[in-house]
Image (cartoon, rainbow, N blue to C red; front, side, top):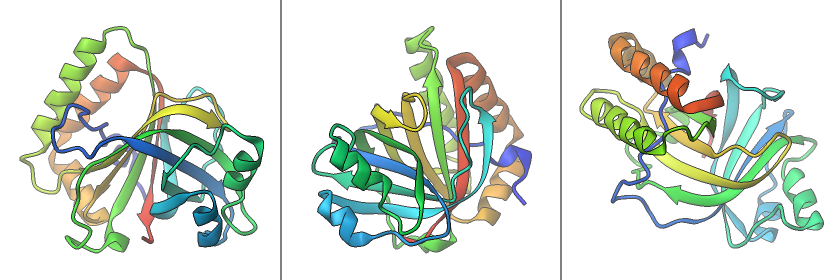
Amino acid sequence: MIKKTALIASVALALSSSVAVAEKMGVVGLYSGDFELDDQAVTALGCAIQREGAIVAAQGKLAYDLTQPDKFVVLDCEDGVLGQADRRQAATSLFSDGSAIAIFEGALTNFPIDDQNGEVAKRQYVLKLGYYNNADVDAREQDLAALNMLAQPLDGHWINESFLQVHAATGIPTPDEVVVIHYESAEVADQFRAENADILKEVSDFNDAHLTSFTYLVGSASR
């Protein structure tokens, strides 16, 4: 069971990080149903699979109706998929016998991680969809950097993996961002949250101050 605090202890990554890989076109898709991803359909769209996984829980203060998805994908793409009707349709049909709940497209920033450092299948993944209020962007950036600095020295902290600056969406109104993070395992995540209540409070304060709407989607990845 995912505890209430499990999804609160996730933070957007610091975009100013000097180790981030250069931006490229990315797509994050959320799907419902028990089905398999069609690798050939992904290739036909000019995309490569960066991450594929399952969603098992959701939590947050999302202002829009979003059916909890069963699957997610993160794709690196040569070009956008939402700007043309035929490509939108192809993107919604990437899973056999499944249906798309929401698809997000934009500038994808990847943070270098070592996939050999712990098995991907053992990780706990968290995707955060966020809508910013933009009341004080400078303070938001400062608070975000401070949160990451607080967390980095701690054992079992989250790993920033990808950030999608969303430019277009289907299914729900376009969010500002989709952030992908992971912990080494669900057990490591639970221990980190249990031992760092102060971080949870800081994250909650950050969300209250700078976001109008958000949700955390938690699950695992198969690749």
